[in-house]
Image (cartoon, rainbow over all chains, first blue to last red):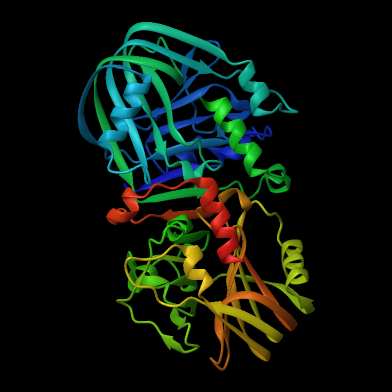
Length: 237
Length: 237
């Protein structure tokens, strides 16, 4: 039975900071926990957008492809889609957009999925280049990310709002990916201007953090909370 | 089907800091997620010890009673017991005990349940007095806690180890409660000396944070992560 109350996460965002980029869950396994979401592949290879049970990769080359069931994710968030319309939004820059979404939520103390189907005046994204072992840190990797910009594009924004309290496990606030309808652009959203779109929200009562219990590097890593959160804020925004 | 891989938590520890002590889940509901654990009741009334599907309250008066199914918890952790012996421990003070347990765990990056059945040279616990609305803060409440000490007592230590990274959602490190075999003492463990006992550990791949989505005070509260973690460290240790 599908659980619509749970936001499922494989991995903790903290593990990406020191460079634990090895995939630890198959896409097939991941999809048993949800049909919609975001994530990345082994080596931090591109940005994943999961819609209608299909997993798309926006690679740093700018290419979009369908990801196979046996590929591995070090980090991903998924949920079973049961979101509800929270109305239409129009003529908003990214800050205005974030404020508008927060106004539509009941609280900033719960996890939400955020989905917008709309027309964007502009969208600015990034995708990370695939890294090889020994993996560099998240900060080093993000410094070499590829950025993409497109004007007047229709597409879907998908991602999450997470309360600040859980920074470290998650990227606090909004974490949004994008996929255009024509698959010409995707990625982790750095900035946007929305012409018009419909906002869909899904509030979760459960946040299920699933950790890679068999990954020796993860088990051995020392995490310093303050440094971790600082690095996440710089790399993910 | 019982899920032995999940540590379930109702509420976030952060909510206790500003004084959100209203129970938001019934004991009956809680027990559908586990048969073993720790927690507290509405008003922060005493310390709960959950063993063999029975919920015991050690009240600040020193009395121990069985809690009813319709009583409410603002915060609790439970799991379905499937722990395994990690060997015997002997002649340890609290610091030595913590170090010994960490040595038996594979990592400090996963959540574990920690259970010790043993004989204690001494045990030092606290229990919180029931608070009335408008609730004071956790720091104010903890300042008025009742402390108990007993020498040469047999009993069960039950609780959890949580990685530092999740401070705020949880009390980082060890969070242990105690119940003596003769029900003469219980509570939140502040200090101990172990004569001899058997340690049982259960490693979890999932941490399921279940939040009180219908509690208006929780939804409206502003949480400042740094202050929250500071208050938790002072009140819970």
